[in-house]
Amino acid sequence: MMLDGDFVAVSPASVWRVLKQAGLLSRWKAKPSRKGIGFEQPLQPHQHWHIDVSYINVCGTFYYLCSVLDGHSRSIVHWDLGQPAHSSSHAISRSSFESPA
View (cartoon, rainbow, N blue to C red):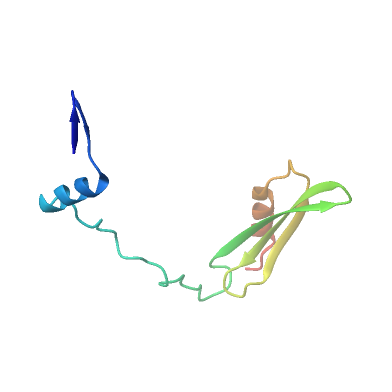
């Protein structure tokens, strides 16, 4: 340790040793990981929908491909291809009216 005026220079190893002796170093208590618990699959069709939005280049013009997927059967319930100003909420609202009961 070097003391010069009001400045102290200490090596990292010395700081570690002093903090450990004082009991100030402890492991971070993280929450247990929820990884691997998984997602509960829906038991019936139309219980859970997923949306996928893809950006596609068609002859130099970019379009959004919005598809609504059923979580149970993993089939496409509805899809819509639109200009960038076209929102995905439009595809969702249309698919809710067109889905079978």
